[in-house]
Length: 144
Image 1 (cartoon, one colour):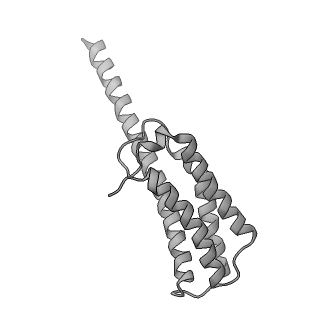
Image 2 (image 1 turned 180 degrees about the horizontal axis):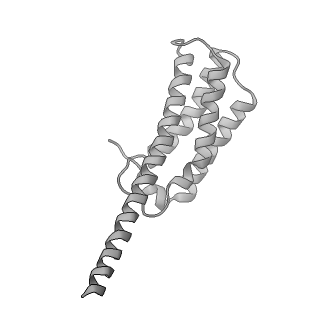
Image 3 (image 1 turned 135 degrees about the vertical axis):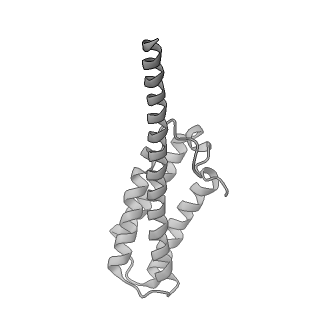
């Protein structure tokens, strides 16, 4: 009888730990996506003239996008398919998802290598990065 109780408690603990792990991964990737969204928002404010051009703000925003885009595919391990806006297609077409994320990171790196020097340059950068984001979201983000 004691052995069954211990086995049941161990199994329950493992199941709970798996759920906590999955929830942690979902929160982590959602946080990274929110950072990218915040960075895009900062660039958009400059692009639209709502905020003055600030080279350091542009560099910080694009650096965040680059860093997070490169790390993003690692935030989608098996077992984290539910509980977020991530579409099942991510896990079904993971190589394509990784390629799209890599493209965003590479495009951000190109922008960092030739940092915009004015509002028009930020607008051009936004068009490139926004297209990358949109391409991925069309396929891999669930509609709310």
